[in-house]
Length: 297
Image (cartoon, rainbow, N blue to C red; front, side, top):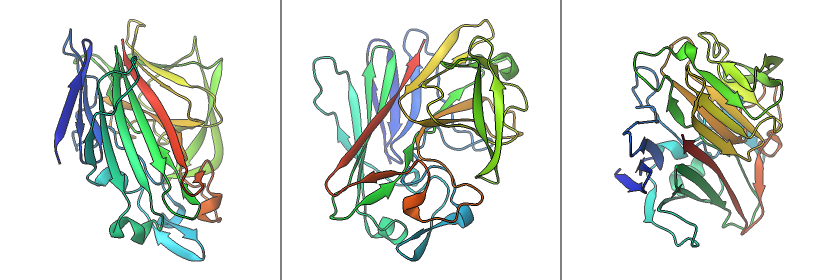
């Protein structure tokens, strides 16, 4: 494992080759760090990539072609060493970038019987980090997968402030409807969160039922808001669903904003790997590409 760094005039980032995980995002004029530090007392990660599943499987396994395969929450890519590829050529508007690659091997094929190529990139444009995913199917059969982000951001941003004085802002209308999680699985219940001018306060009990899982394109921009009402970080995405999470009951000083192309199983799911909700499918030789953007303000 090794740390790699790039910067432009406004921001600097560090990425660990283990999991190709974003470890630091700083604004250069103030030195402010926006990424959670990864203290294992709360949560040891900072921004893992979720692949080839997002969330948990019912009974910790999935059924494919008559065989059952075990897989732990969020898949295996976050715990594997990626190959550092350096920079990729970009058009004139492109900024400094870092790229990493993970390929299927004997270890992955035991729990996920698909050949794959996963590339993860970070590109800087002014005050924004663009996190890019590219999944390629090199085989001669269909490939099913899910992928998602799990970046954790400091909240509160300033030591001495209270998290309960911060808010989340969504580019939604009057409310958000979130699926209810129990034991890592989607239940039949839903929770409606009224929004005031797009905002939802980060209360002490907001995450008591685990992550807020917001499906069906209800929002595509989420911001963290200081006690004085100013936005200090925005995550933008085209993903059809996303999660907002902080460890339940820990009063942890961070909040995750997570764009997803996939999610955990429902508590009563009894289907096959191909039938998992929000899953992605690639034909032989095809690639899937998506990104999300983190802007510091």
